[in-house]
Length: 185
Image (cartoon, rainbow, N blue to C red):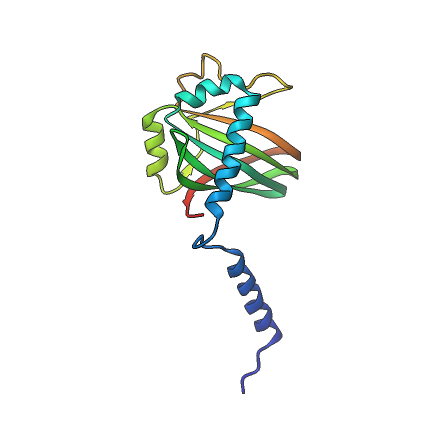
């Protein structure tokens, strides 16, 4: 007769819970949920940032990340899922993962949208195993109720990022990178 130690039982239980939490997407409605959130994010953006509608219509592709959750205390992270749309049709689904460290504390949720303004930028994003936001991204941030949009100096940017809908509070200076990875919801 084999006895299972308490430690083995805890490890087995933790592994079982971890595997149960990782849905593989087969038979799930993950894509339906993501698409519903993407539709709501797109509609919010169009109604609250009318100038952004022009960029949305000119983009070769748009990656909508409707809900990113971020938390940190010295070390932090963020995660969210979304969809890449071309001609307003979801063609791929992505997760965004972010790691950060530095002087930080708090938690927040927000949405962000990446507009790929050139076919080349879109092709590089889709071909990458894991794409990281870098120097080729220009940010269009709504501030104090002002209109979010790009200035004439950023209209030539290959990728434009809108960040909006922040809820919560996180403060501090951090070094971070966001990696986008194709997923099967």
